[in-house]
Amino acid sequence: MNLNAVKTIYVHEMRRFQRTIMQSLVSPVLSTSLYFVVFGAAIGSRIDQVEGVSYGAFIVPGLIMLSVMTQATSNASFGIYFPKFTGTIYELLSAPVSFLEIVAGYVGAAATKALFIGIIILLTAFFFIDIQIAHPFAMLALLVLTCISFSLLGFIIGIWAGNFEQLQLIPLLVITPLVFLGGSFYSITMLPPVWQTITLFNPVVYLISGFRWSFFGVADVSIGMSMLAITVFTTACLAFIWWIFRTGWRIRQ
Image 1 (tube, rainbow, N blue to C red):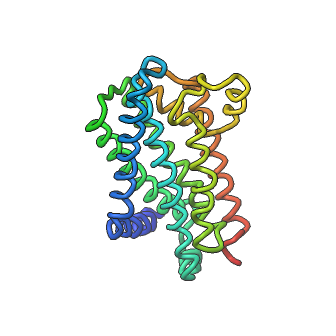
Image 2: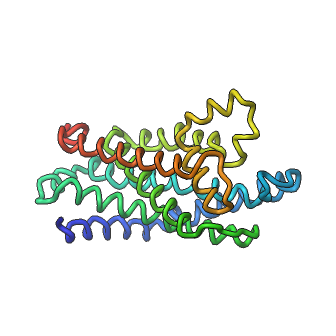
Image 3: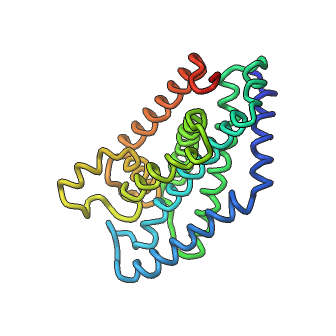
């Protein structure tokens, strides 16, 4: 593997993150802080506990996942779309760089940004709520895997998108609703039986459930199912990206 190529792409993307620090970091942290105030204080004062956990603490994993998934997707999609928009992607494709090195650079940078934002939001939560992390290593592993998998999804969206509006289409109209309906602010056991069954078809449920388990040791689905879901999702994204570079779909058009 050409590590110099990976490093060049990675550093270039991270420098763009530094130039837009207010939009990339401060904005999601402030938005999440408002969620803590509204849901944790206003609604949390009316809901005592959910599965033995205070409501304010219960929503923390869901809020982190909401920010991480949307930020990882948006950063990766814009990172690869902009070279398409300017035409510089052809220089990259003609260089002696494999698709793995291109993906590693762009996805690695997007995942790093999302991970950094997730950690900052977690630290912010300690100012509002008393949180205990039951399985810190599992929490970090699930957070990293989520950052990588949704950065891969964002990379695919960036290749697919034909304009800047389409870059926000999937994160706003698909990912965000799935997170809200995936048990980020409630336990799916609180739903009627029919809706519990329907909710299990939402793949985000397994990610949020596994991440919440790492905090409190409670989950709507087993941790094994959560790990299987994120592994299958990551593998599917990698396979699709391999097909994109093999066929030139949306790249050489």
